[in-house]
Image (cartoon, rainbow, N blue to C red; front, side, top):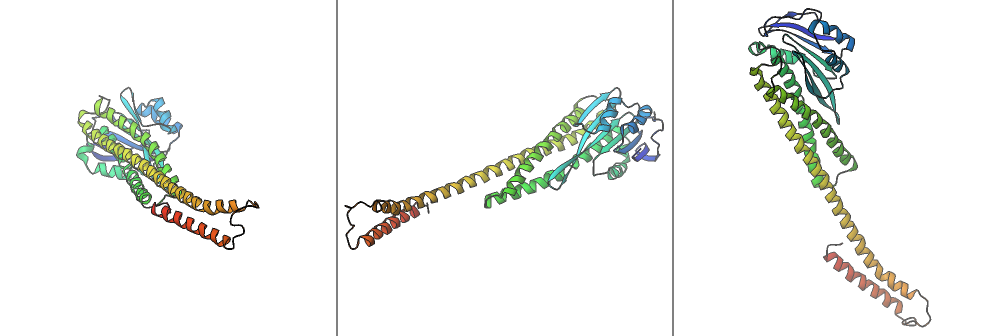
Length: 321
């Protein structure tokens, strides 16, 4: 079984390593087992079911790793699913962490998460007085750890969005930049689908009486909920920024097309003068004025030149050329 860590804690301090087939402790809440697994198979998780009384539906969900963030109650146990996220290149990659919470045990099952819980354990173990509260404080630490991983994603996308906004206000966006703009909007929509259910999950931990969650632990979950709500506001603002960048780009493109259209119309009007005059004198009728005039050719050229010059000056003053 892919066990990353399995320890027994008493009064907020790590006591010893434990085997996954060891009996579930039945002491006070300050005595609990924290087991961390990474990408186990369903049959491997099933072996824990008898020792910790895990629900078979929760076992199935933890093994499949295709769940949205959620919280479910199975008797006196909680089953929590949270989504991890990390920005990899131009896209956000998601993982999943399933958490089984009993009175004296907490079992985490990670799928696709690039951030191990080693530092999290060290951080929690550095505050024994808080860790002594039991599994609900560990659950808060895990959720807070996952939500903290969302912050760099939003910051990086904010920087890129502001750079695109500055680029759009200075010149026209390229096809690649417009494609990136839509890619960011698509990633933010998907990310928002993770933030919403996660905030709902934390809201239930704050407002509803649940097994293994003490009243004293609710302020910690409220803090995580506040972080999620702030992130949600920033994501909404980012979507507005990207939308405004696209609209600004379209306005500039329309302006450029309008300028080009006016220039083409002005040159077409100027060229219409020699075209019309040449067309008239190209009809080859016998009785036409100026056909026998010695200076007729030069006179017609002079009329064309003057007319074109007058039109050019007028269009230039009107800002069309």
